[in-house]
Image (cartoon, rainbow, N blue to C red; front, side, top):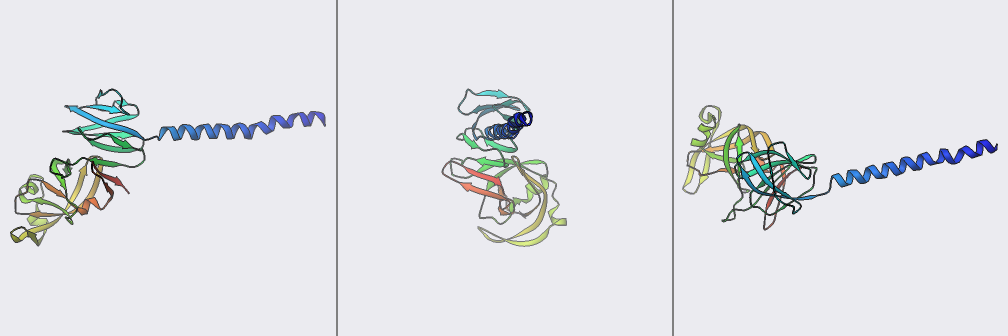
Length: 224
């Protein structure tokens, strides 16, 4: 009996040790998901100059990391980063973005006239988007559609569209892929119009797939 009793304290320590180890792992995982302030200071070709949590700016090449923030791609004045399990696209000069890993998001800063603009791709071709929450679909002019290889007259459905000068001819089409930063949608409804347009309107046929928040400094599109 004394020998048996002497073994009980040793066995009782195992659950305690397991609980302590589990708690330590939880703390480590929580630390890995701490939000960070990330700022894109500038771009040089395919490299990005990045500051994390107010630290000294560093120049990163594709695939390199700083403080857990990995550079994936540079497109003009924007860059896409992998932060934990999420992807974030930032613009040069915008205020530091508070990033919590977990969901894919895009942060845009307003231009001087208050519009939100960004480079993106349609069917793999570069375009300049302007966010328009009043547009039911993506809208682009016929010249841009032809450059993107969209045979709207053959594959599109003729429709009437309202313009500043009244009714005009348009075509309803589907875009195989639309990408802006790390956000991508497929088979997206769009409208082609004859009237020349300086930008491609990024309308609700794309925007409605994301949670959208706006303040005085930025517009954030985040995966739902």
